Length: 131
Image (tube, rainbow, N blue to C red; front, side, top):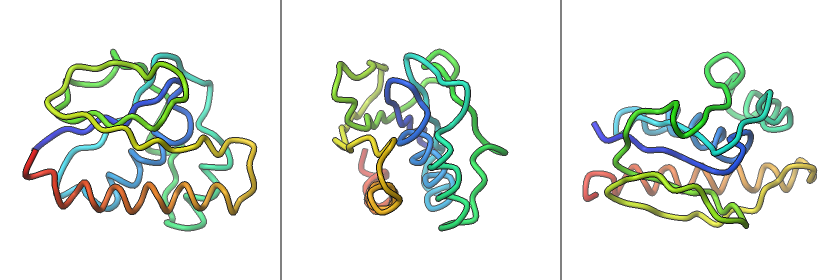
């Protein structure tokens, strides 16, 4: 089974959401990991709250902020759209999703990013076998 890493700088919001939704929607197609070049002491609390409300996923029970060196070698790297130099990680395939960081934004903005990630996870699930 292919391994997919969702990466951004701090591994506290978008990449964590992508890891959780990858495990939720695509666990039968690929293994999901998230990581960053730095870490935060906790996952973004708005992301935690909204993921519980929308999907019943408690990211604080199943995930934590990780460095790139904390995850296994991967086949696919998805960068979130870091607006800075995105972290590099060796892989066979790479994609940048160009997502705006919703930290500090309204719930509506957060939900829009979450739903975009959900859609892209489902698209990735469909094409993972071609990668």
